[in-house]
Structure formats: C-alpha cells, structure tokens
Image 1 (cartoon, rainbow, N blue to C red):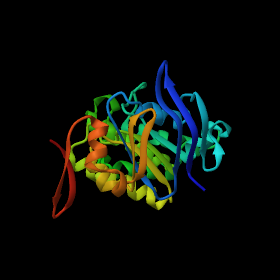
Image 2 (image 1 turned 90 degrees about the vertical axis):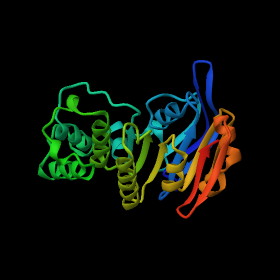
Image 3 (image 1 turned 120 degrees about the horizontal axis):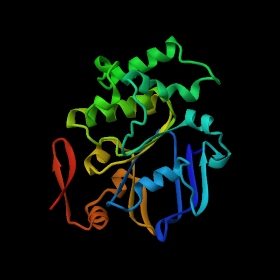
Image 4 (image 1 turned 120 degrees about the vertical axis):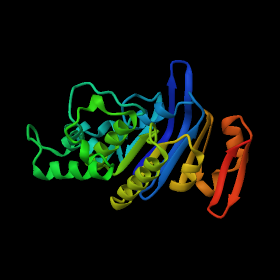
Length: 255
C-alpha cells in the first residue's frame, strides 16, 4: 500500500490552476524531489497534501485512509511538514521549540517527560544546536532557525516527510549533513519523503524519484535516472541546461 496516494487531484489558487487531474503515489523507502520554477505551485501542492488547504477535487490518502478522515493529532504522528519559512509566534528557547515536536505523541494534558527531553536533546545534537538549548529562538540566525525546524521534525518522528525547501539558509556543509540525516531517519522508519528543492544536483544525490512541475497539465514523475535529462530540465526552467560528467558522477549546470 502507498504511504501517500493522490488520485485525480485538481488544485487552484483563485483562477490559477496548479495541477489538473493529477495522479501520484509515494511508496515506502522512496525519496522524491520536487522541481519547478518560481510561482508554479510547489508550496501549494505540499500544503494541500498535508491537509492545510482544500483541493478543487480529487482524493488524497495517507497510509490508505482518506485525508479528511484522519484526526489532526493522529495525522501529526504520521505526517510531518516543514514550512518554507519559520515564524516565531511566542518567545521560547531552542529546547522548548524542539519539544513541540512531541505534542502529537502526548496524551491529553500530559507534559513532556525525561524521555521526551532526551529525544529533543539528541535531535538538537544531530543538527549541531546542542550548545544553544537555552537560547531564545528570536536570537538565532536564519540557518540556525532552519536547523531547529528540522530538529523539531526529528523529534516529531513522522513516517511521511513533506519538506518545503529544507536547505533554505543553510551553508553547503549543513545542507549535506542535514539531508543525509533526514534520509537516514526516513529509512530507519520505513517511511517516505517528498521535498521541494531548487538544486537539481541535490535531487540527483539524495532522491530516488523526481517530480517536475512544468505546468498544471504537465507534471513529469518518475525515477531520477529516467526523468532528469537536459531536455526535461531545459523545458522546466526555460533555460538551456547542460550535463557534465566527472569522476564523482553527473551534474547539471545552466549554459
């Protein structure tokens, strides 16, 4: 059974269609990258799949159950969503923010226990924030805030990960380390991953499959080796793309 199954999905923002009669399945142990030009609707698609906005029509199922049939707290134990940007509504510390990822797993009115705190501390260590646990979130840099958002998802421990530009604000070192960390976590849970990226070469390196959103009637899906080509990428970005071969593998660059 697919962890995420989409059938005949149509999404619009006002009069602007994002996808029309779109079918898609995400299996366990698959890691998908989503590519598309600015404003094509990648974030809108992720938010719709997560149940944060309504589709025009179609069916979305998580682990075989229709999205609207899930209770919100139960869904949050299975699905984790990383937003494109983080908003700090309340003054909290780094540790307190990471602990919010445990909320779906706690019973009504219960507080975090020592095991929850240990999980949060481990996640902060994994993203190299273990020395900042008592810092106020609003004092963090953009990259530190991004790593904290990913640590919170690690604490939440979902099986289905929907990530909107997870490498935002991250330097090269942290991009590679954190994407490796996410893949390892998803793999350990026999889960699946769908993430929006702007770097084609990160999709080549970390993903098994790719979704290329060219327009609402043309979304190309399939294994990376079959779908990522200079022809498809040039069509996607409306710019000539060339492929470079090296000892480390293949790379795509704009001409």
